[in-house]
Length: 171
Image 1 (cartoon, rainbow, N blue to C red):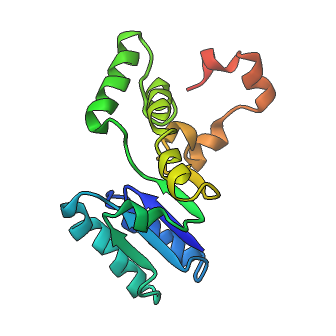
Image 2: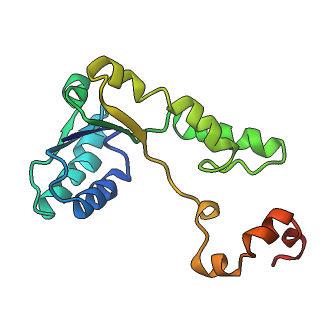
Image 3: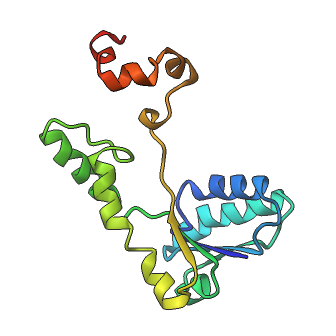
């Protein structure tokens, strides 16, 4: 099975590769990291390939700047890019903040704006190189989406939260 990663030189990719290979050894014949930026290919993506070797799976991770090589024959296309870059993130969050809303990029309006820009992107290589591939996207998880165990234990039961009465008294 082949997994192709769009944005394979991203800072989280070595950790992603380690988690994937450690939890599912042998599940992938190839994890192809597509990264057009030469510096990222030579650093972060190369590190991800070395992680695979340390985990006893040398050669499973490949790195390329050639889209045809990366996406042809892919069973899965995983998008790890930020369309619009850091500047896009700042704009997304500031627009929400100007309206008095937390702009948080993973769960708030900033995340919605990022999704609207990002969702179409993995579809392009999927359609061009392998329409049968399944596409998905890497996203971070904020504290808001996963409270600490201590905080979760203090949270009122669902029926109280639904009534709305807990908000005025919760610490």
